[in-house]
Image 1 (tube, rainbow, N blue to C red):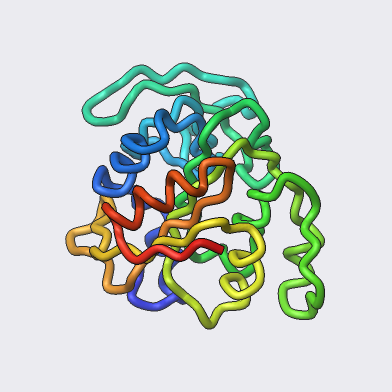
Image 2: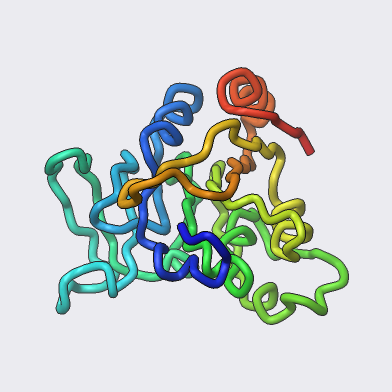
Length: 211
């Protein structure tokens, strides 16, 4: 990820490292869906959504393609399409989202975690994004996010969807990056196992707030 938000776009295809997703699996079990994936991701999600620019030209859209394990990349089912439009559930299990950080202001990567339409009160800032948000209806979700508490997406969107927020005690070194991220990051959880996740995350990952 970049040093400032304006440079996030240059590194939107870096991946989540094992130090982030292995504790998630240890606590909550297998990851069912990664809706913001790319071919080099190490996240062991059973299903991944790829944007067309991340796959070879001519790859059919919306057709499940079996990808066998290669190197450290685990086997998975890949579907080419927009993770903001394809379903996140129900029935797909735990959804893990490391969204493109450059899109958090204008795209509803957080609001997709809601089971129904977003109702967030005053929406002057970000109204276009919120009006375009379609509920993903996930069973449960974990997001890996930059800590940007001054952003409207954090103050409105995140606080509207999250049950638990954990501020990681370590700097994340994303796959594809030489150095750890220069900014802090957090894991946000929404789902029926909030109490279990909060207890685990508080002990193992960092300062945790239950909302």
